[in-house]
Length: 352
Image (cartoon, one colour):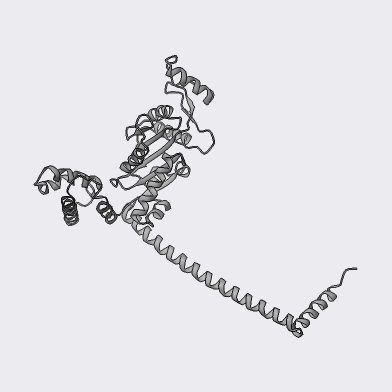
C-alpha cells in the first residue's frame, strides 16, 4: 500500500531530528555543509578567473581590431583578419609556414593565404615546395594573375592526381561576369568536401568533349594523351591540392564565404610598424652573401627616407597619391642597388 503525503513528510522530519541528535549524523551533515561551502567558493573563484580571462582576451581583440582598421582603412574585413592580428608577427608567419607545409604533405587539400603585399608570401610558399624537392611543371603548377577559367580547368587535368596548384595573385574579379563565375565554380569543385571532387566545365562553350561521368572523363583524357582524341573532357576527378595567395581581404576575395569555408584560412596582414619589424628579422636571410653592415645601413637609410617622404606627403597633400610601399620587395631592390653602386643613396627616390 502506498504511503500518503503526510507519512512521507513525517518520515523526512524524523530523519532530520535524528541528524540533529545523532553525533555521527550531525558530523556528516556538517562535513557536507563545509564541502558545499568550499565548492561554492571554488565556483566563485573560477567565475572571477574566467571573467578576468575574458576581459583580457577582449582587450587583446580590441587592439587587434584597431590594427585591422589601421591597415585597411575603409575596406571591409572579417573576424579572421582580426584574430590573426592578435598573434605576434612571428606567430603569424609560423602558422602560415605550418599550414602550407600541411597542404604540401597532403594533410589538408586547400588553403587561402591573404595578406599585406610584399611581405614574402609567395617566397615562403616556394620555400616549402623546395624543401620537399618538388619541381614546378612536374609536381606543381604556379598560376599567376593572367590565369583564365579554361587555363585553370585544363591545368587541373594535368595535376589532378595529387599535384598542387598555386594561384598567386590571380584576379578573380577581372574579366566578364561569366568568366568570373566559371572560375569560382571550378575552384568550388576542386575544393569540395565530398570524397570524390568532380570538376565540371558548366557552360557548353569551351570546346570540351561532353562526358557523363568522371570515369568517362578519365577515358577521354587517356585518348587525348595518346593522340586519339582532339578534345579534353568536360569533367574529371580532381585529387590534387590547392594554395591560393592573394593581397585581398577575405571580404574582397570571397564575399559570400563559399571558398573560405572550404579552406584553411591564413590571414597575414601587417601594420607599417610590423612590416619594419619583419624586414629587420629577415635582413640576414635576404642576400645572405652581402656584408651585413652594409645591409643594415641600407635598411636604416630606407626607413629614414620613407619616414621623411611620408611626412612631406602629408604636409603637401599628396599622401593619397599612388606610391610604392615600404616592404621586403623595396628592401631587396635597395640591397641590389647598394651592392653595385657606391652612390646608391642618390637613387633612393626611384624605389618609391
